[in-house]
Length: 401
Image (cartoon, rainbow, N blue to C red; front, side, top):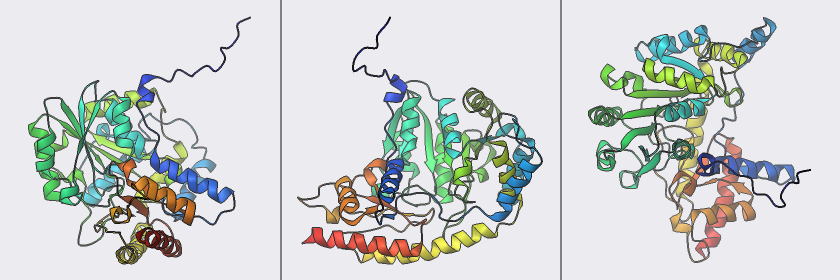
């Protein structure tokens, strides 16, 4: 009888071993563990709306179940959902797409995953601006591509075409764009976005535009989608969208992508052999989200605006903190290097001290590629924000002594 070797090490694949754990999920898990122990934790780490999914969307899901719409759909989503996505972009941005360009996915993250792994070959370079969403480089690593990072601190974390041009090499295949940005909240001006895409077109590259926070933009900045680009530039682009933030549907796991038909067919092949179609009930809910009343979106934006305005002023009062004003999403990304000293040498150590001594969760900027910063989510109540800022101030004052 065969015996299992003692202390056998599981042979993780090279593709997976190249990936690092998600720092944002780690922050969520830390908060959850503390709550389970009965600790009064303030969680400013989660990138999740604290609003409930609107009732009309939930009712649409309930109706779908009652009608027995619980079966498989086509891999790329139902015809009705594809048309709802197409109609949304025509209504909001005056652009038209064909069903052959549109597919539904199990969250915006899967849309990005499909796009990267269907395009990138081993050794291909993928440009990613810092700070970046933690998942971008890990998907590239999984695809055996090479992440090439663009430093944007000198431009206050707003990516420019000149910065992109300096990092392009003969091996550059793709650039991943994210505006509004997670974690910085910065927005690439439409004119600069088009210059970047013109560069992509001229160099024979491709681009992914992660538009997860598309609708959450604060005046004077304006809502902008890459869908508005000229047709020749759109041929080099995949738009990745999500229902999670806009409609407070994080747990429903539904997103979509829009790309040229050939790219979409390749992504359908990936999805067909991984998750297959997204949840059929969530698809019916998403149709209602797009076609139904949009009051919930404007109400959430108004509340995020109120929290953002309060938070930015409060951050200015914390010793050692400095924060560039975010124009979108629901994050602040303050520089905390003014708090670092011989006792605390990195933002990782700062967030650890904040967690242990003040029971407050934020996300270390190093997970987004920028040490010395932290991400604060204001997708939580104003009361929690105020308490969290009080606790951060106590730690910052302690470190300043």
